[in-house]
Length: 62
Image 1: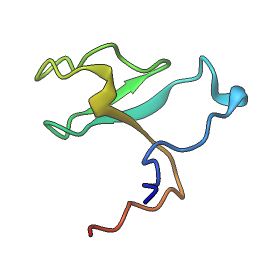
Image 2: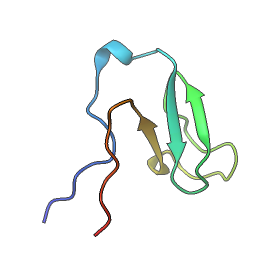
Image 3: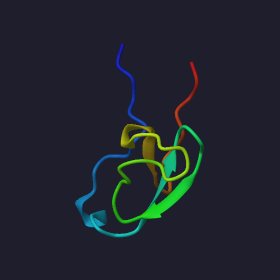
């Protein structure tokens, strides 16, 4: 079974522009031009930080 990714597809036009990222561990919203290497609040690694984009629908729980 394939699981849909929660990260929107890569868009080269957005490279280097400030975007919003969300830590899945502590729910902190981070405004940065690039994906943070770790969460500044809880220290979670970058695999727990996802980009938030307008129009992206959250995944349904199974």
